[in-house]
Image (tube, rainbow, N blue to C red):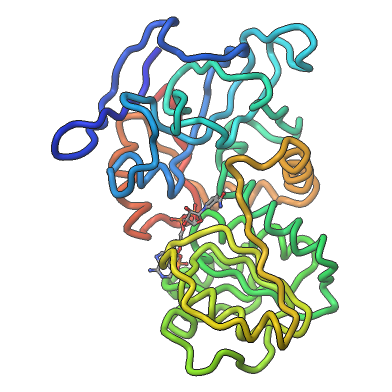
Length: 328
Ligand SMILES: NC(=O)c1ccc[n+]([C@@H]2O[C@H](COP(=O)([O-])OP(=O)(O)OC[C@H]3O[C@@H](n4cnc5c(N)ncnc54)[C@H](OP(=O)(O)O)[C@@H]3O)[C@@H](O)[C@H]2O)c1
């Protein structure tokens, strides 16, 4: 099996294409022929060494994979030939990940892919898109409806942002997109944004803890001042689903939106989300996501191109998603 492995060395991690034997695949009772993976923000951190996100060394990178089951234990609900997806769990944390032609994982990590999606489409969605779906579900569960007013999506031209816009627009919401790349205005409008704002409006320290009420809810993958400013503009009783830290991990704000406007800040984690939540998220994507948008938002690279793709992801240069064809 061919794989992109990361090894910690003096001077930082080294990414290398290697050949591994069946015995080196890792623990697990389900064997999968991997067809596609994806380069997520977290993969960017791991592959470039920008942040230590892997717990073991050496380890195959890639927090996502989609492929076909080779073998699975009886009673697991899986059978040879099933199209499946694995997002997060221990992949590229303490278990070999998806940048490989084969994988072996515990059955509890495996999600059946909705029949409508190909394995390429599953990875065009990937962890970023499935996380966007978890955010959309949090907003729906909170009771926010399209009649309550517009929603804001930060980091709009990134992976989470792009899928969140497409999904929320398809659910009937008016979506405002915040981006640092105003040149992507047309792209964001095609995905379903009705208004595109310059992220500079949100990314600097805000003048007041509460500003005029503007949005009923938000999806934030950026954190820091941007999240604080979004919170300050959420309507009474609204919600922000935060999943990311592209601007920063800090939260330099005030409790005013929570105690004076009853705003909810919902934390979204995709890595260890329950199987029930994963199935709900994939069902929502199945029901709502226009697959034509996936073509528009996705670039495909081979295993040899992952390192440069990872650098572009961290530099904020990738529009939408990067799929990895592990056989290319
Ligand atoms: N909690 C979870 O389980 C989970 C799951 C998936 C992702 N995440 C996190 O969510 C974040 C986004 O992931 P992604 O896959 O969408 O990454 P991505 O494709 O790289 O997109 C991130 C976007 O954030 C914006 N951005 C970058 N630097 C910024 C800055 N300094 N200030 C403000 N905005 C900035 C850019 O959008 P514009 O160019 O449009 O401004 C960029 O495209 C990452 O922090 C990732 O780790 C978390």
